[in-house]
Length: 535
Image (tube, rainbow, N blue to C red; front, side):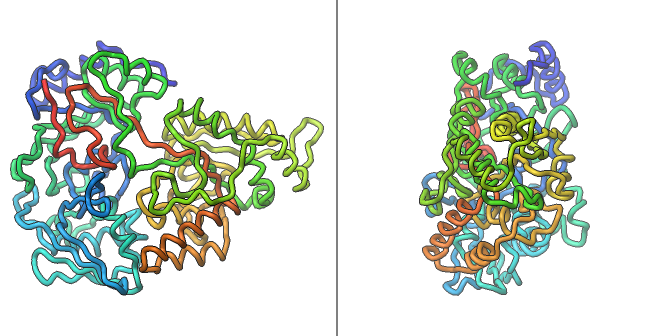
């Protein structure tokens, strides 16, 4: 774990400077009224804050308070959804259209009215051609009709399951203002860095290396929301620094496990601090071993099974994740009961069996005990992925595989794995986002162009599995589609194009004064309209 690099003195200095800059004194130890100012930790600084283009948690964490989707995930809503910019939605029986009734009386932060034209423009000009996830979900979107200002009818060239569209609504349907984007280079539009939305908060300012500031939208469509007057995202890239800031009462909340897991037991005992594991149910992260099938050794199923048997998942859960994770059985997590099945082949921790499989495959140990060597690239995004990389190297040594650890920064890692294919094994943390077609099947589907992150760049090709994936993508009937994805899990577990090790949600640590935390399954990346801070 990282050492504490930010002292209380340095944090307080930054806090006071922020207070002076924003014209609100007493940021470090302010006594807030109900509503008030919420100060949270941010461990990254996304430059593009347009979730319609970059649908990622780092962007959503900030932008979801500004830019709204058609619907949000809900613990209690119909079909697990709660209306946002859409109030009703319905898919046709043939899968060729989907109709959305849109909320009336909504205005953009610049005062212009929100209409169906904004939805049509967002879908056709942004989600489908530009968004990392929308490209898949809306691949067959042909046109969007707008019979009136508050109705949008999506038309598809091929049957598109409404089950997929519905499950994807919170992630891929952030609506942007047509009047600010039409006729511009959308990818470089200034509104990508200073977003204009319909959400409960308005983008106010960004100071690189210091903070983002959002202010209350006084014209928000929801009655008596938002409750907060202001949200400050303090840039604290060092996770131990976030823990120190919480203890010093200089921030009030740290999401996405910004506080190191090793510190949770200690910090939970501090007066006025609570540790919250809920609110990430729709953001299940998966610890995955990506495999480059271009290596003849790794193209051998016996070798892949040997590696799977060499991994002690219980040790990983207990020691790497300190119990804040569960073992995976395959590509769909247990947190997705609509699709999940445990009726799949599993690989218990068994070093003897792993060694026997490698012997059968013809990879005998050399004089030094090594069968072959390979390059292992852990993703640098989380301490846990890096720690698992070190563990896996040791586990592979036990079965005669010499793994060279290659640690890169995020940009170099993505280029090496997803563009240059300069890896043998890689450790990735993909996110399951409510439906296997959104971000899961792409991990094993063949034919994905180089450069697409969190996709099959290992050269794995299985025509039977590809056919199943393609069939599920056009199966309109929900029960039949669900059955196909259960078969998908069986095939992936049997052939091991990659190895699913663990799955986890994140942890939020907050002061007791922060109210309405974890109120939906995507809380950290939802709008926080009902969140408040009490004195």
